[in-house]
Length: 321
Image 1 (cartoon, rainbow, N blue to C red):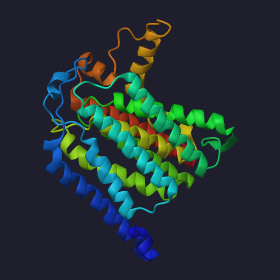
Image 2 (cartoon, rainbow, N blue to C red; image 1 turned 30 degrees about the vertical axis):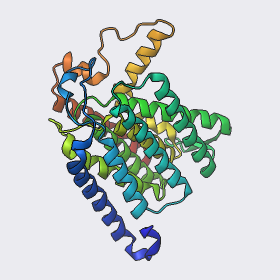
Image 3 (cartoon, one colour; image 1 turned 90 degrees about the vertical axis):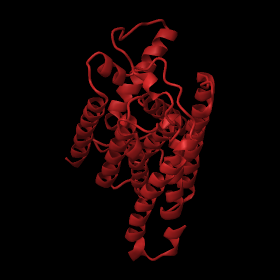
């Protein structure tokens, strides 16, 4: 790694070079390779889903691999972060293979793969980090059994991957919300003096998503697909774990949780105990506000982003009190 080959005074310059490299490679690779991506068939149940038919999808493979390459070259690495990078790439690849498939993968297959990635994430985190959870607003630490912590991490990862995936339905929405969430986590790390070298990975990941959004801003030229949204969800969960205050995931990613998660809850209640809720609400919420409230795609992205920014500011300010 380049990072280990230079003296301390050049680290900031190398970090800047890594950010420029990550953005430049993602933009260039996307421009060059988008024609080779699988084409979208349109989303049958999504509002205006037919408009996406024919567009390249699965662009997540480009910006995730660009992130992994930039991290390997420019970021300080240890065994824990290497494992996380591998898991993010694996999560991306499972999504890309689904994007490229003529028939969408079944829920059972995707659920099993999510469980495997979540379990490996839990094992990795617990091996290299303390088994305590901090209630950041109250400055209280709780020691919990390893098995319970592992279970909670699996739930967190599964939720984050799936709500982020379900929020991917409007040009620029999930990418914008992910950037806001992880940059809020970056600010939290700075306030709480957490994260260490993982903070630089947050910056690299945000820059790669920004490069993707260069092409995905409405009207989009291509879509990230499951390859991007699932990897983003995993990255958010890992980043929030590294704050040692995983409950902060709720306010830091609340718009993603509500947008993508309410539909999952509604579907689970209908299939399980046959309970019907939110019968007059079209889910995901980004479909409801466009179809029922008449918001444009741009209004949806901006207004959802504004709400999440306000929540992020409140979290950071609350931690500084």
